Image 1 (cartoon, rainbow, N blue to C red):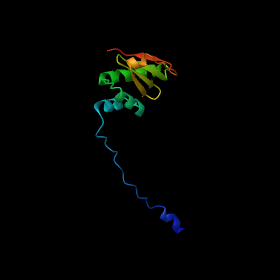
Image 2 (tube, rainbow, N blue to C red):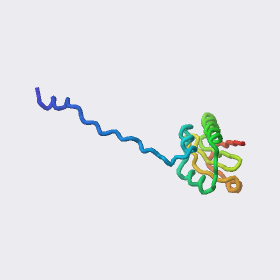
Image 3 (cartoon, rainbow, N blue to C red):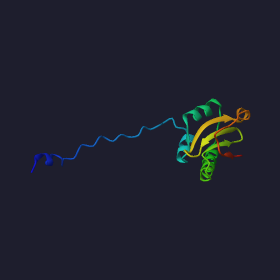
Amino acid sequence: MDSRIHSLHHPLPMPPQRKAPVNTKASFQEVFKEAQGLKVSKHAKSRLQERNIEISADKWSKIAEKMSEARQKGVEDSLVVLDDATLIVSTKNQTVVTALDRAESQSQIFTNINGTIFIND
């Protein structure tokens, strides 16, 4: 027998497992949105902060639910109209792309969307 064959039977050492970094700065809303499968893009997060747009956990849940419904109906990119904000979302990716306050969104033209979701209080 060839001695090279026997050397292949030794198990290779496994690399040490790394723990995922813990994000201690995550807000309740961020954790809740992740649990719902809804992602918020970096751009949308900054727009929400810049424009002081606050969306409750209940409303995020409703947004996620309606996005799933829209996706089932074939909608890929949608405009979500809330009482105090407007969101552009990708239902295909379950991602909030950007956010505007309602006053700002009234003078805008929205393109490349194939659905609109209205969510009232």
